[in-house]
Amino acid sequence: MLKRLQIYEDRCTGCTSCQLVCSFAKEEYFSPALSRIMVDVQQEQARFRPRVCIQCAEAPCIETCPVGALSRDEATRAIRLDKGVCIGCRRCVEACPYAGVGFDEEQGLPLICDLCGGEPACVDVCRFPQAIRYAEEEGDNA
Image (tube, rainbow, N blue to C red; front, top):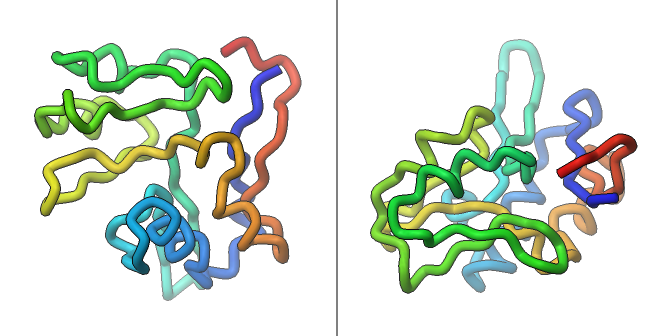
């Protein structure tokens, strides 16, 4: 079975620690704008929705890349970006039906979760309330 990030919106407190730890893990400094996970905040309703690549089986982001910069990691089955090949066309951002791919304007590269090599940093920082988990899903055929 394939392990994936599982998001439980009803448990999210909106602390955005997941965004901070993600950006630090990937960019070596804290910048929510460079995180691969984003928390949509609806202040009026006090609702928070973590948004991240769900590593879908169809992977339209991979299919739409004109230069083959996106692929699957053999071990984790996560989407992997080859920064040296990417041309920054944003087709992967537009192709994602779940709004799980961001874009770094400064570097001209997509921001897509690679599951931190199988040990997602966002999961560790979200121990309580466990709004993000990394686990196998029943019936997964990806």
